[in-house]
Length: 584
Ligand code: TEU
Image (cartoon, rainbow, N blue to C red; front, side, top):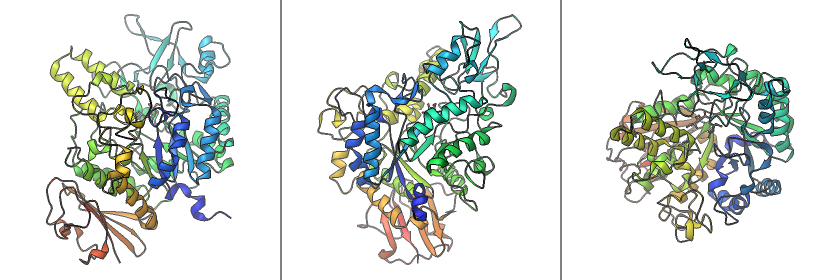
């Protein structure tokens, strides 16, 4: 009989997210690959990781870094072969690690044979596998798309005209990523067999469901409300996420997963608050084992447009309330959530939420690791995060930041402003701050090796300019490094899993401008976490306790400080210092 902990392995696991393209190149073609990942599994395990999540490694044109799949059952050739994947699954399992793949089934690539058939004629048997609609016409008789939806990326319509069959197809993301029509049962069945069963048969333990809340479109494909006055196309995310049949569809997906005891972690952007989140992940009819909520990573992003911001335009209370909201998902429910600050879709967390000045970078990376490793839920760490990798520097050419999302935004500002210098400079700041490219640069394995040990040749994606300073080899040999600190935090998380992974989160003084203070508690076990986000000392932090934590001043109660115990003054928190105390 597997133990309860084994049955719910994903809860206590820390999952390491890998982007194959930029993780490790084993065959000298400048692109990362599956054998490269296998060669680093021991490293990943040595960090304290229990599982890996692999971003899409399926075959596809890579318009959106693999989130455009043209063949679910084959590997993108530069990454390797099916045999390499079978080896990876086996190598993970040999180490008692689990493997999670990315499931991209809201859309396919426009090069997928299904779409090519669908597009071939109006009466093709697969025409309805995608979402096709006739044109509308404006007062002057000009052809316009079927509704006013804007694509998630860029400013253009979410509909693309197909001149050969004279209809539009829907693509929520790039025009190379047509949305599948989930209304058709035949399509859903084919998807499940092709994309899910195939891999579960090969022994994959879990899937991360890409855009898991977007499969069901609103009835009648009605216009989105006008939020950007005077613009032709309007954001349709509110309409297209959490659509009318989404839970029904996800239950069907779950049925397939259950046949294999597989775990599902669903990405649910634009889904806010308990009422919207809980139906996915709790109660009898729950469909997902874990949800990725976006409240935290959304802090500091523009409301209307993600990049319409100045860097760091957020306050600590904003970040704290976002975390509280996510932690609250677990309160009085059987729901489960993901804890994460980074992914292939986010800028680096030290640059966004910590402090990336040279003198604070390391300590602030450790501070964020303390925060993440003490919150409840499944912890996800993205490649390079364990090194305290930061965003590109201020002089990095924006034109070189390959990301369809930030690239289209930059182009839009360029055109709208007529290349106005101030506007372009503002957009460049925002792009360097938030672009997904920040997370998509090669892993720095060794500062002394050529190409930072990522590859034996010039990598296809430029190396991060700081790879000489921030890399695995240096940090593994340094007990004060961010990497060594992550190891300690993951160890601590394991030792105190009941309270750190499963405990109740009780924030104290949510409105404090520079301190993040909270308790984690489970039965009579209590842990206090104090995080000073400021560059200033804080001498009155104990005032935030309100008698909620009985702190005796003995050192023995202190589990860890990111500045070490030397020079620790109980009363005074040093700049960017974090501490974890264990209660009686
Ligand atoms: O992301 C879904 C999604 O909603 C994105 O808009 C996400 O919020 C955005 O990238 C944040 O900047 C998934 C993948 O994670 C992403 O990489 C893909 O581009 C997208 O789906 C399309 O498959």
